Each structure stands twice: as C-alpha cells, then as structure tokens.
Image (cartoon, rainbow, N blue to C red; front, side, top):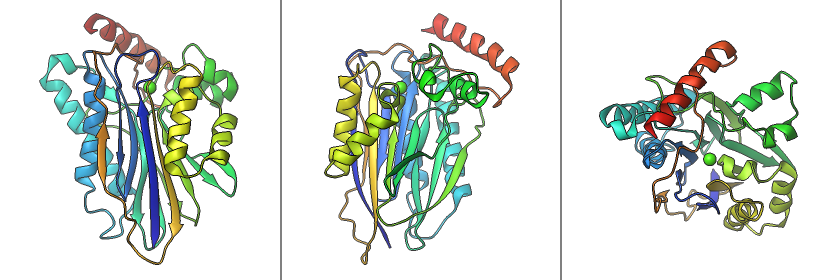
Length: 295
Ligand code: CA
C-alpha cells in the first residue's frame, strides 16, 4: 500500500492583487490549477477545475482505475468551466491550467499524472529531478524546434502564451502519464509562478534542504517571492512511501485562495492544435484582442 504525506502552499506573490491559483490535496488527488481571465474569472475557473476533479474522482482508491478515467474527469472539469463561462458574460473566455497526480491504485503502486497547460508536475527520484509533464506553451514549442534553450525559455518575452487550457472549448486534449510508484518518490506540482522565478537547480537546492513536504512547499513559495514574486505561486508536494497500513492520517482538503481585488488577465491565452503554428498565431491574436476588449 502506497502512503502519501503531503504539503501545500499558495501565495499571491509580490505584484499581483489577487490569487487565481487553486489546488487540491487529498489522500488520492494532488493537483494545481492556474486560472486566467479578467473580472476575477481566473480564480473561478481554477476553483471549478479542482472541485470538479474532487467530485468526479471521489471514490478513487476504492477500486483500481486507469489513465482514461482520470482524463475523463479532466474533460468533465473542462466542460464545467466552459458551461459556466457560457452562462455569464463576465466569465467569458476564462480558463485554467491543470496538472497533478491521481493515486489510481495504492495497492498496485500506480498513479497517473495529467496535464493541460503550462503548470508542471515534477518527480524527484533517486536524487534526480525530472519534469514529468510537458508544457503546452509557445516557448516549449520553440525549445522543441531547437530555436531557443530551456534557460532562454524561462525569460522569453512570450513565455506566457499557453497553447492549451481548460474551459476554452467544448473539448480538451489531456496528456496523461502512467507512473509506477517507488518508495521515497516525491512529486512537486506547481504553477508557473515558481518556474518563472526559479530554475531547476534552485528548486533542487530547496529539495535537498527541506525537512518534509510542507517545509518544501513553503520553501519553494518563499523562493519564488524572494526572486521577484511576479505571479501567484502554488506548490503541492507529495511524498510516497510503501507502508504496511492504509492509514495516512491525512485530512482531505480542497483549498482555493480568494483574491482581495479583481486581477487583470494574467496570460495571453491561446488554444490551438499542438504544432499547428499558423492556426496558433491567428487564434492567439483573436484571443488577445478579445481579452483586451473584454478586460
Ligand atoms: Ca500563473
């Protein structure tokens, strides 16, 4: 039986007025959502994403399940956000990223990582940090084509262009990754507020110093703020150990931080077929124009 011990932290940062991130941290579900959209809609979108996952996958763990069920739950969340945006013009165009981990088979030591957008799920295993997810971002496509390096992507002026997000269309493509869990695996799930401010070496430095998952989550949010805090930062840390009992002693929580004031659109949002750059460019312009006129 895989036992999870978790930590989570979220912070508005040092520049923005509201926190549009949400997270979900139960004994089976560990997700981060980074909302976008004016008139406070971003935090509505991210909150719907995590609450829908929590409801749809409430029975997770009672029976072993698979990646397709997790992807279905993400698609259900996509529809919930899309429907809410269609009902209320103030929420038109709202969207969110979503990434994280579902413990799909605690006994069989299996989990599924899911991703839409540019929030990230990392795995720390055997002293090495590996990014499990692949960003659905314009700069990642430039890295893939060899046009820029990973380090250049972090500071690129177009790093906020997202190519895939939840709630923008009636359907969404969901990346899933099957994980065979090992004892001492540590997952770090974060919004781009962390990775835009800190590179993998800095994150690794904190991993090595942290005393536990909550300490690490707090440290990483503090690191993002110390390096500028230009965006909201949310970090969920999950430590797995092969335990002899099913009792993790963890109280399930669904948490979202409410903004104190309306936030401006935090991203230039575009949704396009992955790799279809002409279409991307047209949609980026359309969405940016509509965001500017509605914002
Ligand atoms: Ca963000």
